[in-house]
Length: 250
Ligand code: PGA
Image 1 (cartoon, rainbow, N blue to C red):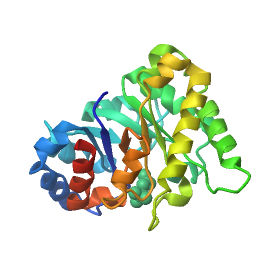
Image 2 (tube, rainbow, N blue to C red; image 1 turned 30 degrees about the vertical axis):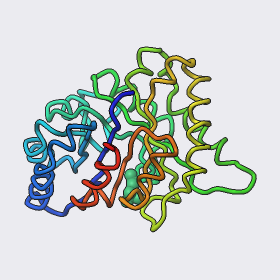
Image 3 (cartoon, protein in one colour; image 1 turned 60 degrees about the horizontal axis):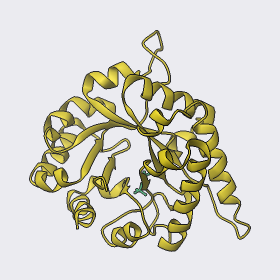
Image 4 (cartoon, rainbow, N blue to C red; image 1 turned 90 degrees about the vertical axis):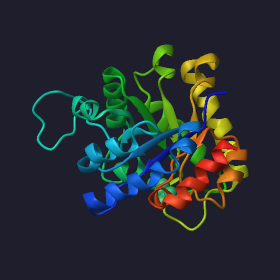
């Protein structure tokens, strides 16, 4: 099995370059732990240069988004070539907080193709807004996967893709998903990916979980069958981030 994956989604934190420098430096003392797994840090773009220097050798740089085209003239856009120039290896794409700002599955699919084209690994985020007894969330996830992966059907592309299941109702909350519910959803996602890419390719796509992951629930969530985690708040706390990495290593 390949190494477990840990991706820090710093979102729009911390609030200054000085704090980003100190947060990234504080990870260095556990460099050997982060090297045992595949660790990515996704800081705000403005802090990338500094963070990238501080995590060199033990973690990879990731972005929280990517523009769907480029190079060209797009005021305000951070195009794949700019991300690559910082050394970005992976892009979080279709995070629910971006979808809430109006990003559609169609745009997400363009971004995934742009990332693949530029050699950046796309991490596609999917997740339902809510759950009901009728299980409509399964259909919702199927649609998100199908539309977000439109045009990404080649077996070669599947081998360069990661999926993060992040139920929106579990993000930024006190409690993560129930491990049993997570396990069911992972099986479902695997089935949808098999329908799209075929069994062999689908089996190789790592499935990550995000949504209130912390050191107290990481072991149970890992036992549900995930290949890694995408923590938000816990990634801003060096001790919590270290403890989650430790659980992934065991
Ligand atoms: P959280 O955020 O860990 O703070 O819930 C996760 C995410 O939004 O990726």
